Image (cartoon, rainbow, N blue to C red; front, side):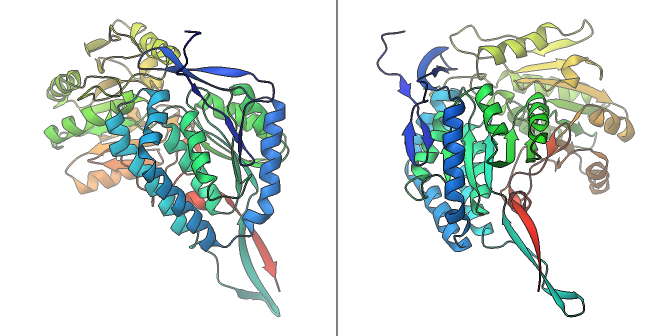
Length: 477
């Protein structure tokens, strides 16, 4: 492939300019739908990270002094630019991820634009306590101010969406940003910075490409005051330990392993239809994917049969394959990880449908349903992050809650029932940051998205997410 001339060349975006790594080092980008190289990106080292962080620090006084209405205008114009350049944006995202173009354009891009527009408005609506006299002769006022330079590290499953979830609230609050996208999916993040550069002062939004070593350099840089990451539990633990040395603030959105409780009074047809779609969306590479379905024992067999039949009809495909329900896994390593979990299933587990990779180029895996698993099994305790769903029976609510909560993660959960009181009991009993009732996976810009326990702390989206990028100052007059 050395003689190919159609490879994409991705560059860093530092201080308003697109530049290669100072060392000239690059990483190869692979198209997951074909398994072939489709471009290169910089492999940044200390010089590049330092240049980006110092550019962000230089830009901070000017940007943090802008009015909320000015920041609103900028974010709205960036949203408009993403809509206007939808074809280029889709090309960038699809080239790195291999996901179906129609799903990205129809589902993800409108949601990305909405997040920018939400935070544009939220920038002008920061809450605060009223000025008051809490001691005689003194008036207290609260100010909400930017944190400073924010280092943001985003994953490969939703490259553009996760970048915007991080960048939009940080900029809305008056911070400056150094963003490091995943080493395998940097193209749309750099395009976002290029479009934003038409409206932002240089240095406000910087993108450095690279690997884990690049991320470590960014987390450790002395100019960085807040580190936000969406990634694995292991990555969050490593970043938290590194950030502790300089007492940097942290915002961690880590792994999920979402349980879904299907009770005997649920609308079975609706549950099967929705869950068979949402469990495999984006090839299951979603921290809120409905990967563990717990079904009341009286309807377990009927649900399993219908769900497996519907799952078998969810066929993966490439970016332009008509009718593709989901795309490939992110790369050879992710495909191997998913295959390994299936191959290591214990003897008591049964693959009801799927269980194999597709016999075609790229990293495609069939929609897979596994029954007969036990709570202690690896595939139950681990976040699969692939198109594999386990189905387990439960006898009553108490057992369902115990099974749902008996994993380290706590990002999202779902409950399917017609009983309002049961739904409310579940919303209290499930130890997660999100609970969906008779639906799954839907996010809205106005509501927080975050978890508990090994799923991290802090929230993306919503006014809560905006406040995470501010610090409070008490002023007494």
